Amino acid sequence: MCSQKILSVLSLVTLGFVLFAAQADGANAFPGKVSEFHSFPRYDFEQGGRGCIVVTPRVVAEGKPWIWRARFFGHQPQTDIALLNQGYHVAYTNVGGLFGSPEAVGIWDRFYDYLTTKHGFHTRPALEGMSRGGLIIFNWAKANPGKVSCIYGDAPVCDFKSWPGGKGNGKGGGGAWQACLNAYGFTEAEALTAKVNPVDGLGRLAAARVPVLNVVGDADVVVPVSENTAVLQERYTKLNGPIEVIHKPGIGHHPHSLKDPKLIVDFVLANRRDLTIVLAGDSTVTDAAGWGLAFAGRFRENIETINFAKGGASSKNFRDAGYWDRCLTQQPDYIFIQFGHNDCPGKGPERETDPATTYSQNLERYIADARAVGAKPVLVSPMTRRRFKDGKVHSILTPYAEAVRVVAAKTRTPLIDLHRSSVALFNDLGDAGSADLCPEGDRTHFNEKGAAKMSDLLISEFPSAVADLVPYLKP
View 1 (cartoon, rainbow, N blue to C red):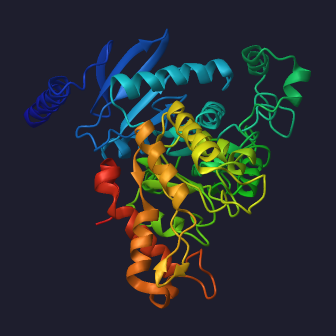
View 2 (cartoon, one colour):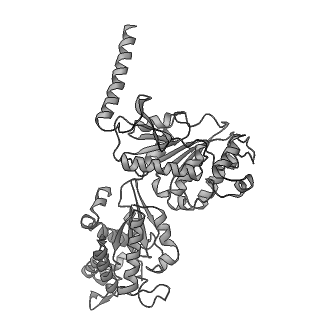
View 3 (cartoon, rainbow, N blue to C red):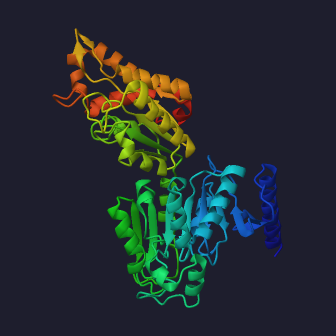
């Protein structure tokens, strides 16, 4: 009995020390009630009139990563506890009764801003939603694809027609269906045709390559897999979105999660995204014929590089074809921009630009657009083609490279002068010596060796051009 009393006192002292330590290092900057969640400091408070919870780890992981719980806080907490032990914060804000509606998305927007700006939380949380929580995690992620590292859905509602609507094989939610209609301001007829569910409009989420893991019970009659996760999986897969589903044979809607959460925790940890880099350019930037794939391989884990470069693209038609809009919707940290090869004379009016006027204007517009969405633009001058005259490179891209330098200086945009460095490289190697960097008979594009060499040139200018990216490179 005496030993038990001593242990109880020690437990209280330990909890008090944890809470004191959290306060001492500034973690307890949250208002409201202080308690504990499975021995971790828990803070309950209101933000924007909505109940919120933040649980802090004992040792905060670098970058302050967090998992954002939707609905049913504390239910089947094994994943949250495991991530707390990995240095993650756990956060929750109450959007009960809103069924993932635009109002709910707006509340989440404000809570996200509060945590990331005032408390320095990581800008790309993992999202966790059980049952009806699926409506908000997917709808918020679709509206903010660049602000999500990954999504973990557990028996998630992916279509409100299934639950609470009960318009398929499921039981439905009774009075919750009318509450759902009220939250969206729909009549039933409008709700049945509206494209506002997680299964709808997945294009931007897939383009951002946000990984999804759903855990489902195959015998679920409340949120049937066939009407929810199966539809989401089919549509997301067709869009080349990364999705994995863990099936629990013979299990219904409950119990949620996995008894051993290792697979879920490993998924969250593996898909932490510290930075997103987007590449915009022509075929010399693509993965297949340019430096894109080799460049992406130079970064360590948790750095996502999304390549939107297209063969035949110029600074003009890349925007006209809608590729630039796709770049912006990723809400990236950096956008590397390289055009010029297809801006040259002879490429046709839909592509050609003048270095001193339209080409420069296009670059300036790209820079302004990137900054408007919070991205940092980086200009890359177009590398030279392997064309020689009297033993030296003769580049028709020189006027475009000079225009890039002028725009970079004018707009104070980081510049990687790949034209200058590639001219120097090819002059050093000569015509014959540089031939093994390109496919046979090709003087513009690169093979694997050439792509690696172009990446060497790009990376060599990081310390002076984009020093902030240096720590993210592989050793």
